[in-house]
Amino acid sequence: MKNNTEYKLPILSLLLEAAELIKSNIPRLFLVGTPFLVVCIAAGLWMRPMFTGDPSSPEDFSFGMFFLAWLAMMTTMIMATVGCHRTFLLQGPDAPKTPIIRWGWREMRFIGKWILIGLCAMVLAMPFMFLIMPFLVKSGQELMENQYLFLIGTNLIYLPIYYVIARLMLVLPATAIDERWSLTDAWRNSSGNGWRVMLVVGIVPMIVNLIISLLPALDSILYFVFHVVLWLVVAVYGIALLSLSYKYLSENNQQLLTLSNEKLDAQVSDEDFYAGPNGPELRD
Image (tube, rainbow, N blue to C red):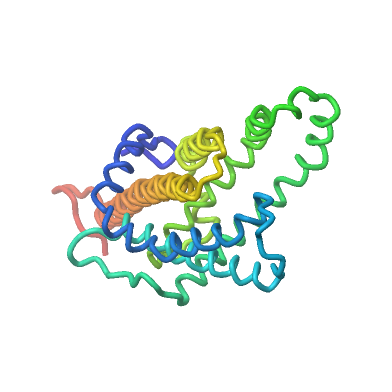
């Protein structure tokens, strides 16, 4: 059996399996994501006139209203994300059912781990923001004038950060199914697969998001709804990839632990015997 540093995530299998997993769970995923979808579309339509410069937009937007809209979106997004992870990882007739609208300690732990990962990302990004970005602004005039080229360039610069964050994000699906993983556990279990985890969890969704960002901006409510739904599909695919990455790596780690225990038991058993004149004999 290969050890954890030799086991390699099957990237192509993960990409295909994630699509199949979504396809086979569409009704459940739709139910899980409905609260967030409704809140997201409602908030988007409510704030859309202000961002598009519509003169008929109301002028009574307040910080409190923005905060309530943001809080509703964040709350339903956490519930939807946890629900998606549980849908992907807890399969079978005996799998526990997850209520569509639920907020408990599981969701609190999930958002706590999310905040920790966000803080790690901020700490890692600071050297790039203060050292590299000013250099790009001064020397890369052509890069700055092309927003898409600038977006691609900054994403390439942040690849080392994506590498770290992608590995730490494995704690999220574990938390969603009530496994008490820490960020250290996520890092240790992804040992030897860091670049593969980054490719599956970070790069693939990032590329798809870049493609979506290239779509033209049309002043149409139906197009806006289509854009939101398309973004949600990409997000669900990214969640499926993260769930499967966690599943593959945790199962491999469990197999290694089982084999290690069996080997240790065999060694202890061998030490209880010694080579006597008539064959192996039990020690006193």
